[in-house]
Image (cartoon, rainbow, N blue to C red; front, side, top):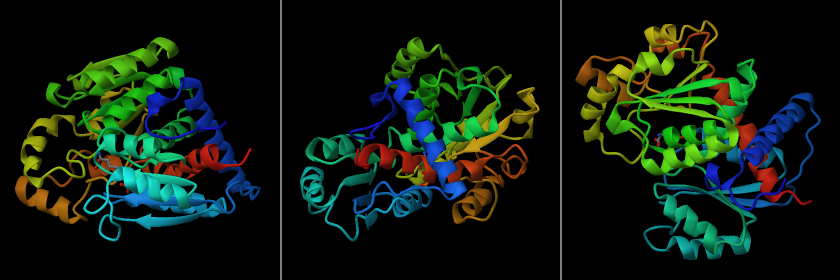
Length: 330
Ligand code: CP
Ligand code: NVA
């Protein structure tokens, strides 16, 4: 398959979305069996990170490396982007030198501008609105761990559903025909735009969409429980108090896993996660609230049900699929 850009889920048809997941599974199998062939030899990819990253940056770098491509990492401090040079000018400069451009930043409009002004494919490594590479990794992980076709999988997401991960999860799950439940207090539920996109996808795939603030109803019969941090990158630390108050009942803990009634339910999280006191933010919040796990408790995070590190590994295989689909010569 050939893709022009990778900006958000709904730019693709459900069939194309599945094709990318299949390609990732194929590339992962090739890597495991020692039969991977390099399809991107001699290509160069610019990686622009306005926000911090562990998984996305390393996944892009190593996926490119394993496929024979070269990468350059650009952050706002060591490049001119933002303070001295516009997104449009940066796009027109980088596309003269690079075969592809990855962008992680706050504004989704910025990545759309980058794609508009760039002659080479642009890849979304996360914006405030969408996190589409994460969704391919999540789908591959579900395929590996839930012994059902996507159309029979019940996927419940608990927590802040207004941000990138929650919105993307709603749309991607609808594209895969799942029974998707967004479980969040009303003020943290997805916006109308995201819901309408998901509903349009559901009409094509037969997905069932539930948006509810009722945890018991939302998680009943779920095969997958997902969550994300309660305060996202770029938000001020002052919002922690209100966020904890609103989202505490939506914490993924043993009771929530039990309430699914499904002994085979798996737990997923895009990471990073606040599940113990081994981070400075985790310790600050503990001082403030006495909570030693936030969106997920440590016992669930460390349980047999948790597939979060397989999910993290799959970022590399799925990002590799995106790079191959966009940049490999025919
Ligand atoms: N899940 C994810 O995008 O992780 P990073 O922020 O570490 O890239
Ligand atoms: N919602 C989170 C996702 C991190 C991968 C954030 O934007 O910080």
